[in-house]
Image (cartoon, rainbow, N blue to C red):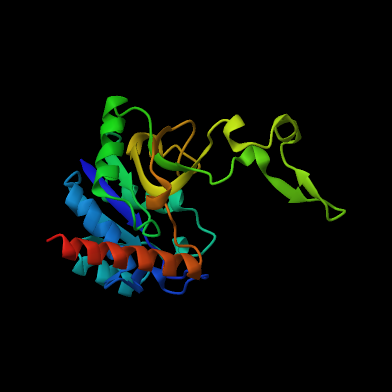
Length: 234
């Protein structure tokens, strides 16, 4: 059994109601639903939410709605706990493969979903696979403002060694695009990505997230441009 779960809380703070806001002609969440369905990897695609409007819109685009309990609806609730509750309720067995996609990553392509799944299978479906992208600036060059208001290197040894980006190891961050895992492992994890997962690198241009209004406007421009180009190529 392969299922996809798209968690989508209704109470987003920085961008109000972002999961169902119109972006280039469709609600934001529709992009994740459509790509999951188009991948043809899943027996079912679920949207998990406490919000009835989000669930209704999601069902219009082909997803199954799962209403999470009220006690798992707050902004301090961890996604991993939401997933565990849902999968247990669905009667999942340890062998189920679970794909996790966040609606705030609408630029992922079907090739990313399929590529991550193929990597998961290559590892014998025994290790979680997590989509990642590179940091714009190596974290080895990160600085913070100290008690005196002066910039201080977070990693002083690395910073002293070199301030050239190319002199440091490539580092990655989870880009909220796709995770593949088994329920057997997922239910034992304390966080969403687990320990030492296998990375599936995605390009930065497909890894832009919507956390702030300016990112929403940026992605809107990207999708509208893509929509226009697709129309010209038909």
